[in-house]
Image 1 (cartoon, rainbow, N blue to C red):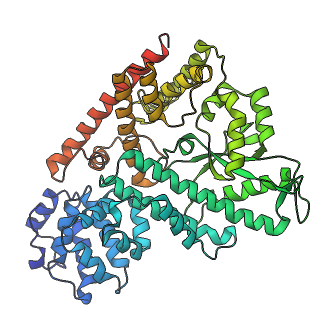
Image 2 (cartoon, rainbow, N blue to C red):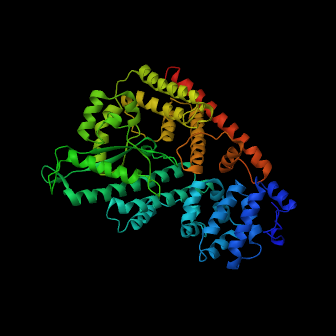
Image 3 (spheres, rainbow, N blue to C red):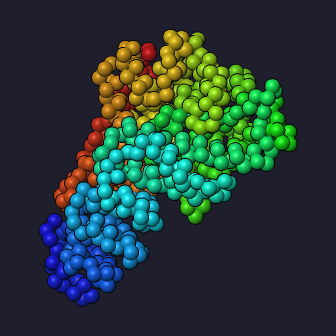
Length: 523
């Protein structure tokens, strides 16, 4: 993109035809709107003594981004809402081309959701982009210390509401930038997203537990032994490969029903459901600052009709007497995410014989899984989204997971396989054991990473839990740019959607081929 000559044109005048053509040729679909916003930015910055070349520099930066119109809207919002004391540092960041400016413009052009986090806290923006902080994923220990600092002085769930939401938003933004700028691989990104969820759940467990103990006293078992409670992560949280905008699937478990609190004798059967409801509310309540996570508790015994928290013995009884095949499949991902690691470990030891039952009817297990897949496919066809659904469509993420889980349910118990929650590691194990060829396992792993990458970028855009590739060409062009499958020129942007859909089709076709081989032949 060549340098603009806007500095020699009165920005308050009508848009000159030559500049309009230049803007349109640089990717701005609405040159009149772009001209108006540049004029308003100029009016905002002129009193601050901004350099004359800044407006052309901003237009150039927006024009080379993934979505020029969106980038300029975001820059307009950022600069017109920032205080005078923040403007000089922002101009230092925006005036000169740099990797940090590219990273910032990637967010401003691709994700209105993440842009909101930056506009609301310019100090955080500058801390992230004025240096190299965006280049690396924060270690879990650093995130833990940061959250503890933000929660310092928050003694009740209400006081923890805003800090928890701010922490999650800022941590996820840092992860998103590092991911989009290809500074870290997809596996590390998914694990760090999971670390953030674990830390938030542990913090919620601690602050809610302190409030309940202040009222009721510490829950104790017979013999003056402290009672315990654990938060079990399920689904992608349990597998440590959480999406950018996943719900978190949880089970709440405690050690025994016959304990009592020290102060007022409340039974653990009454106490721990209160704790579970408090944690759920703190994490999932929608406030002016948003949510921490949407919480899904439907995997518990009896679903929505069941107790929100159960004892270890209660879970054992349910799974032995009423357990269903789909529950065994879901429990493959179970992991202690927060709370007492001792209670979480005892829960996992208790359910392991149910999950990895040693003598299963292979055809029935595979038939159950395949019937579930067929019901999903039918529902997608009915709503017209099957071809573009990254998670549930033909050859999508779910088919890869079903392949890994099918082998585990059939063979892990009988052959004494270790409990493996990671889909990718399970695929590698299956190749080593000879159930998948090396080529099949490699193709499935490559497809899994591509599809998870695509799914995360779809969700980064809006912050919603969606798994569908957009149908509009312009939206596909932005998504292709986020995937690194297009470039800054108009021709490259136009070619991006085709490249992305071609890669998507190649991966999903191969996944479905392997799925058919596994589920429609002897395993």
